[in-house]
Image 1 (cartoon, rainbow, N blue to C red):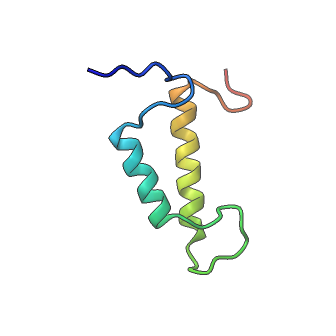
Image 2: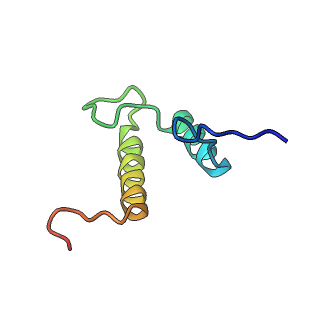
Length: 68
């Protein structure tokens, strides 16, 4: 049996996280802040970024400005 004591510097990723990162890198690789898109699909990257921000905010119980 091996033990790993350095979770402070790095932590193994859950399978779901790896799959989400892979999908994002394959399907939504464009700059969501750009005003142009080579594929004409940067809106997909923007939507994915907004969705990710919302999920993370919910996970850490964050509120948008003006919310209590």
